[in-house]
Image (cartoon, rainbow, N blue to C red; front, side):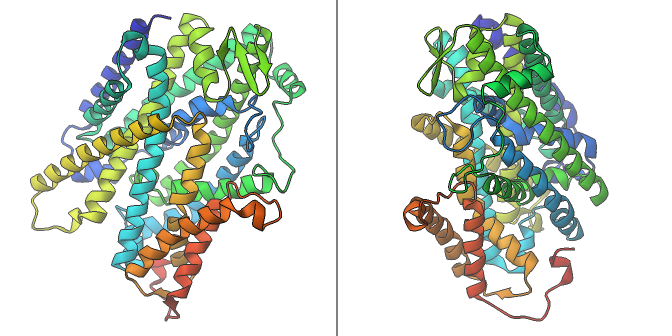
Length: 509
């Protein structure tokens, strides 16, 4: 497959994004950038959120799990345990958190912490979001950029550093003006291309193997690829852990995440926002199942065409095709040119939603929560915009530095990295919000809150490292997010006191 031809399609795709950005950002202002003037169509938001939630991790990493028996967490369709948890968690987001955000008319969801607890809690929550989203978004970006680098840019003599700069510059250009108002439309476009890529690849592999869905599932079952539920209580992949952990990850990474909620609260009213969330949650389950099905089919394709397992590694024509290497290697080296082009379009469609929404949300959070941009009546709209653009550019530079670090680490299973990082960085947010929503107690706001939120991940890490020794062989896996949040919750309880019922608007419905 010609690297030059693939690059042409990447450039053409970017030109389409720039056109959409130019059209949607006309007459935009700061409210357009931050919350889309609260005029976004709920159906567009729901559809676009699919691409943001899935990202390049799902597109590349999830298909690699069914036949990868080297991991200690997901084997076969084991990842679907987490997806079931996601579905349950989205109900909490829709019917507990969204009513709270709309009732308080929030632009930044972390302003809730200020109203409920005070200044330090507010700033601490915002800082943890900035840390969480920066690390998570750059990990996702690294995965996709690395695929483009290996299969296109390396063959053209372009370095990884240059590739990263170009990709981030592209994202910067089409989000610079419109913000949320623009990405609601660009994410919809990108989700469409991503799903088209997924469906076309599934249909092609089924046709090539002369299978239908029923016979494919039967063949996958015979290989042990369709096993979903892990029944070993001591395993990191135990199904109860995965489902409960997945639910809390959905609550934290969607409901307590400014990027995801920024799009939701840009919808006109609560009812439409809830319809958006429930539509999104249903489609996410179906799409994740299709990605797992595609992964199983790719393993069948490899085995039928001469691939062999060497220990836990699968090799085809001397090329390692397992885990994160599976989908890109097969699509770009062993499938017809048309399928390779569709894969690349789907891949870059998975890349950009990971970056555009994250950059916009981080800019919004820093400007509103850290700099107090919305409260600075002494700053003109022009000055506020100038500061916002400077912050936007600064986060682009930070993204670049983080991606370079991930390249140096070069982990082969990014999906495990993402889930682990989420457990450590979103735990304090989970503890802060749950304490505010579930209790009537008043926290003694101050640096102590920040210290508790910093100590909780450290204690969680130590507990995980020594859990097998301390707990009779029990290994902490995806539930570390819950443990982290619980430690934060307990720490806040210790520095809190009983109070007359706080403002009812600040508590759950």
